[in-house]
Amino acid sequence: MTKLRIVLFSAIVGTFVSIIAGFAHADRIVILGMRIPYGLILALSICVLTNLWLNRQFQTRLAGTVFVVSWVLVTLRMAIESPTGDLIFTVTWYSTAYIIAGAVLLSMAAVLPAMRQPETHKPEINGPELAQQIDPQSQA
Image 1 (cartoon, helix red, strand yellow):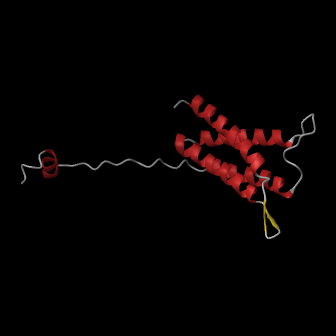
Image 2 (tube, rainbow, N blue to C red; image 1 turned 120 degrees about the vertical axis):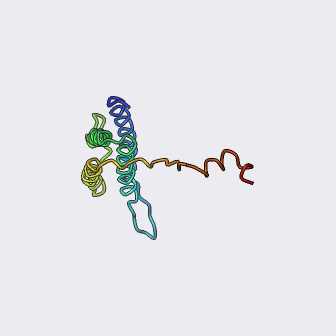
Image 3 (cartoon, rainbow, N blue to C red; image 1 turned 45 degrees about the vertical axis):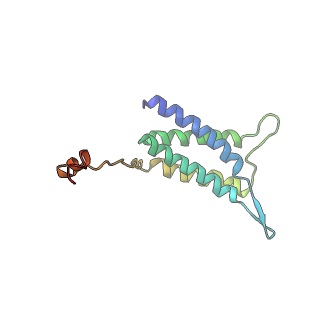
């Protein structure tokens, strides 16, 4: 795959995942009267795992680096107030944690060496095993 295709695919995936994670980070659930911000962990996990998957899929860190750049651009856009007053990242501890932890974790994941794809190994058959497989009745 050419580098241009890797960059374009990673940028598109990075944009979509960053938008989803940007909204999901603020999700919370109430259990026994306690608010648990599971969305923060979910959003960070999705971003880091997608980054690692892109590096592994394309066998280059370029894909992960483009993903991180896309994440930063989308996160900055969501953190800036729009002219109509809409703001996605409000000033809360989980928004701040998402931005700081996301930057650190994604930077760490982007510089890791790309994991290798699993090899499909076909065993070689030699000598008598090959003859038995070709003509099993001759052995009987």
